[in-house]
Length: 147
Image 1 (spheres, helix red, strand yellow):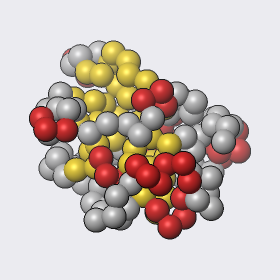
Image 2 (cartoon, helix red, strand yellow; image 1 turned 180 degrees about the vertical axis):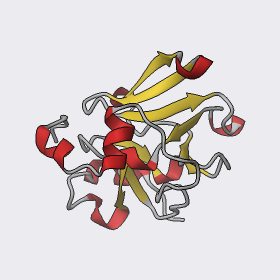
Image 3 (spheres, rainbow, N blue to C red; image 1 turned 90 degrees about the horizontal axis):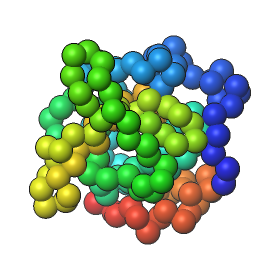
Image 4 (cartoon, rainbow, N blue to C red; image 1 turned 45 degrees about the vertical axis):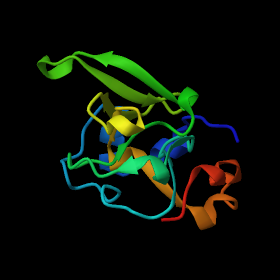
């Protein structure tokens, strides 16, 4: 598959999705529809469709946003220094969509690498395991586990 930010993809975004992904926004904690999602599948960039995170790497951090221990494809996630709001953090962006996804912190589960990718639901689209092959993500099925 080819992943890219297109005018057509941007036109399909809700105002909240646009604010988060294109204007570096953050959704209110606990409001994102994917925060408590426990289905098996993958999470892709809402703009480009590039695969970002697997359900098997998702965990409940209690922070109010979906949290993951690692990206499904390291090369699809870029990490940049973010010194806004009087803090120094590591921003997470999608490589091809250039979407603002959230931030990564070093307070994740130690036994799983110690990272917490804190990601806005508004930047993601969930694809259930049963739909992955049909939507072109079959190569990632082995990276999701049935719960």
